[in-house]
Image 1 (tube, rainbow, N blue to C red):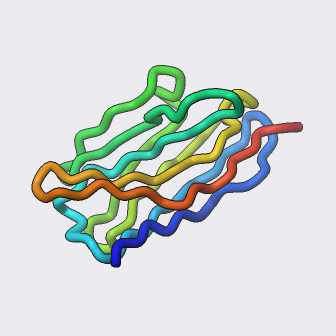
Image 2: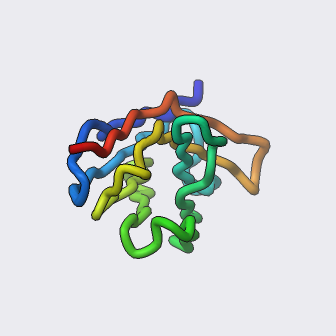
Length: 117
């Protein structure tokens, strides 16, 4: 049974930081590209950042220089370090695992991030 367990969301003031974690189980972690998506109020879900098993990364333009995606293949966990948070970053953040090796595309349950003073 595949599970992506997210943690680390919460309420933070503008300019603050949060680190999201996504612990994966039930998959061969190295087969999967790990991604963080978000869905802001009234908007469609968008890709924030992704990372391959080899460490290649991709970022949404508006978060470049502020967010950093990483993964620990030994712990089957992906992370999203979010710095200099802005109110426009308020969203539900979802972890995604998508394989280019096997037929697999999985989602976490989502974690709320609220940036407000």
